[in-house]
Length: 212
Image (cartoon, rainbow, N blue to C red; front, side, top):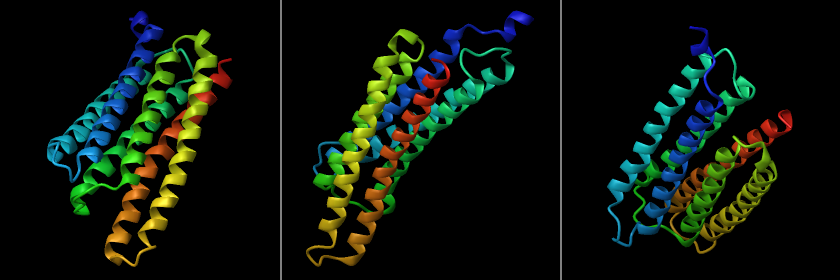
């Protein structure tokens, strides 16, 4: 009975890693979505469904992790930090889902160079986030995790610059106001993915500080 309240450390780390795997899968599907939009090389509806499927799969992993927290007497790191990290990862996937679903809601027929670049930056940040989460299980990898978090912060800053450039272009040539408004909102949804990655990286850095 008592042993059931003391799961192996690996259980928590494995669930967090599985959760972050879904983040990477969702980001990669979103990147393919943006690269294929208007080109005809991808089935857009299938890719949107793939992003949603990864978000739903991650929800199940998050629920399993939270259930494990509730029934566990001890945890490898602060239980509040584990919970916060799970919620942060969930936020990244929710942001990716919002981007994918906005394609249909805003009737976006083709991607722009900036939207493709932001999707690529999002995928890069999510990949680094995944590597950082996986490395949490090994304290010897702390320097690597710190570097990954630093890289995520730099990627988010780059995405900010791309977004500003994209919005400037929208209002430069006197195009459709409606198109400018909807694309500005769409770019904001893409930027939210990067913001969520940055926030998750900060949570990981806080975990490192508390457990150093």
